[in-house]
Length: 71
Image (tube, rainbow, N blue to C red; front, side):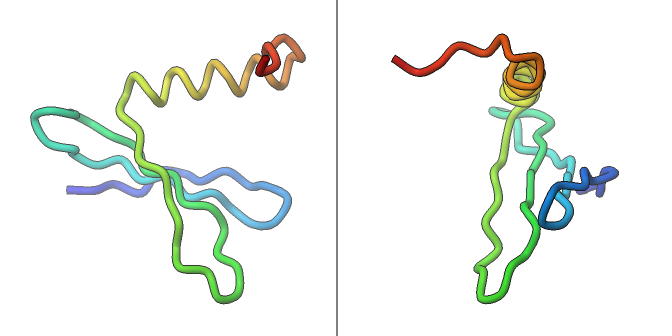
């Protein structure tokens, strides 16, 4: 069963967050759904718990100005 989590307001709308069971191989996952725009096909990103934590750390580093640049 999926659960809608409180979304995050961004410049052009709201990023939706949905927690769901990704099966035995993936466990609990989170789906990020960007704000819908005209003619969009509903893109999204699915992340495992580990990937969610990695993304959260990267976003905190980016906000703090400590995230490294790509070579």
